[in-house]
Image (cartoon, rainbow, N blue to C red; front, side, top):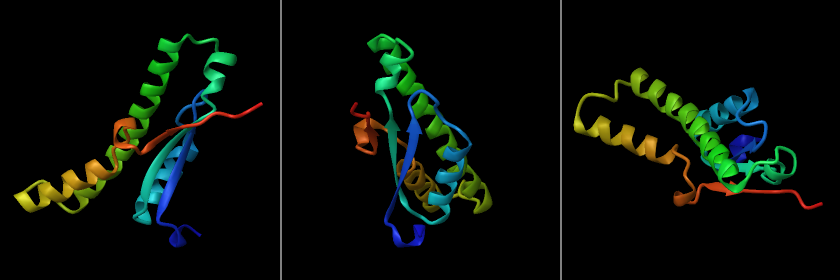
Length: 118
């Protein structure tokens, strides 16, 4: 079914954080050459269940994005090592493009914040 899609939504629970399924979804999106979008879901639980103040919730969300970026960077690094993308300007350009495409950031517009409505 993923071969019929242009992109992949990588859904991460704001309270649970990165889990094994996150690894699997990122890897599958990588293998299928899909454009990823990170969705941080259930952000309301940060204040309702964990009783975090706004700064603590912000810091937790930032750490979650950083963890997903670390997983994505590992995928890029594995490809770079496998294809020797460290020597020469052209290989460096390819590696930089991969890193840019697989780095999640709200500023880039590839991170979505979602919450349930009760």
